[in-house]
Amino acid sequence: MTVTVVETAELTKVYGETIAVDKLNLKIGEGEVFGFLGPNGAGKTTTILMLLGLTEPTYGEARISGYNTTFEPLNVKRITGYLPENVGFYNDLTARENLRYITRLNSMRRQEATGKIDEALKSVGLMEVADKEVGKFSKGMKQRLGIADVLVKDPKLVILDEPTTGIDPAGVSHVLDVIIGMARNHGITVLLSSHLLNQVQKICDRVGIIAKGKLVAEGSIEKLNTELFTKGQNAVEVQVTELTDGLMNLLRSIVGVTGIDVTGNSLSIFSDRDVKKEVSKAIVESGSLPIQIKTRDYALEEIYMKYFSED
Image (cartoon, rainbow, N blue to C red; front, side, top):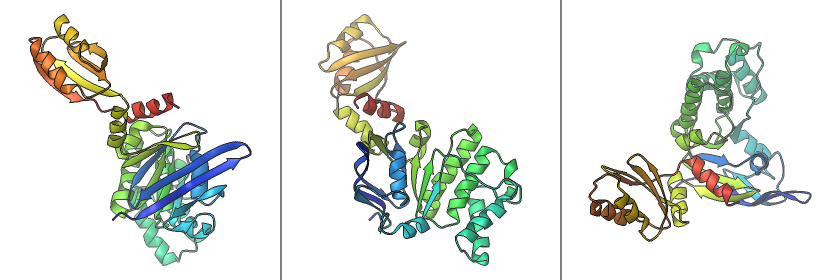
């Protein structure tokens, strides 16, 4: 049975006449990487502030590992790490010295801190530059140091806000590997807020899409794909040996087909129901042969835009 680390129940925040977060219900399990998505102003930041115990909900509640974020904020902060988009360090101190300073702020004993600092630096691949001044680090290295910063606390939950923005491709790859390692190797729950949907799709177990304070979609990419299909968004990708006018006429006559895109001998057939069997039959009847027939999987970006086109 999966242990729930993040749980919200009817979580709501109202500013004057504006509902920033509207009855948000979420459950995120131990060791899960959860993508929290939405445009600017959707309610992501307000939700994160409530999870961190930095602002109180108007009503409803949030719990981190069972601790109520409103009434037990210190307990929440002890087990939660937060990495903002622009992490700040003392540039004239080394990576190790910066982390040492953090452990002192958290009243950690020196001997215990030394082991945790070394372990965190190894986890993010910065052990070789541990004694280098942070002012000489690239942005990607600073982001990895920021992750090491939260790891020294042995958190149950880590909240990452746009952790790869402005980083070169090699740095992005390393940061994503570190995030996956946190979840898989340490059992840490990760809440990832990002606009870079291709990266979210690579590493997240599930995603939640929020718009105008409301959670409009939640689940794995596969689940969201299925939900799109049930809403009349079926798409079949087809490649044939020969594309003829006769085949096109047969395909257009299939009940439920709403459109066909053509590129060479490849087709994208859109429909409001599953038409794969009829498509296969039409190809054979036309005298052509199918090279490939498969259900089209939507990229997360397409899923995201679909929900906002309906918003």
